[in-house]
Length: 228
Image 1 (tube, rainbow, N blue to C red):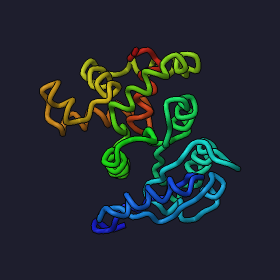
Image 2: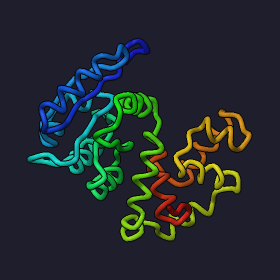
Image 3: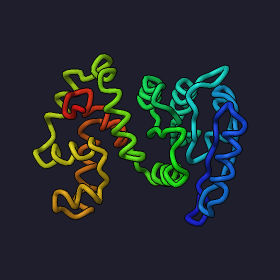
Image 4: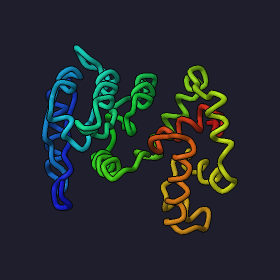
């Protein structure tokens, strides 16, 4: 993909009208393009177009194969096939499924009734490497899921040790990440440059062995660094 090429988006949802609405919205943007549509997770896993997409909008409940299993399979494929970033579409009554999908490797989740600008912004954020999608929504959902996170915690001694390995400043930045703050907001709050914050974030992810900011937030909840 060149700098001038649009971001390639794949839509996976069993509702034709939902896909049509997303397609019209996404294709109305000069920097975005829908390159594939699938009605089930199985279709998504079997479609070469998905591995060549940049971002996949993935519904959770679908026939044949749900979004959780589809996300796991797509992201566990050999790296040579390419790995798109996955955005999970959810509602509050599907919290547990959203959590499972994010643990499977999704880059974040959005409410299905999110405003159009929030959806478009999330696609761009995820494409450019951001892990936290719609921070306020992410935080609300994680707060709502906190009891489940405690019950299914993977806060192992190893995870706790990795958290303890953070310096005082890294721990401070980590707590801000867990609160859904952007690099710009963290820089302002801590009186640091954005470049310095970016460096801290990279070191934090490396020490935590977290693939992105979303997984870092989950680690914060699971190890008790953050409580709702």
